[in-house]
Length: 84
Image (tube, rainbow, N blue to C red):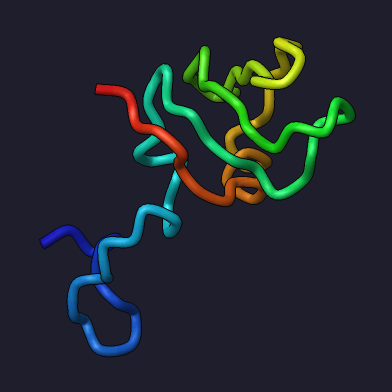
């Protein structure tokens, strides 16, 4: 088993939690909720680009922003809808 997926304390597999590592599993067209609101008041975003930066489009006002992957992972709260 991959060492990254093991618990550092006792070596058991880490629990599968969709909030644990969002950057590893985020897909194009996922709808996500971030911790801080956009100035328009919306917390909800659609993923429009993947790479070193994550491209997001606000679902409230359609504004597009790029977030560094580390910033996205820190601000991520939950998935609202997963892309197929």
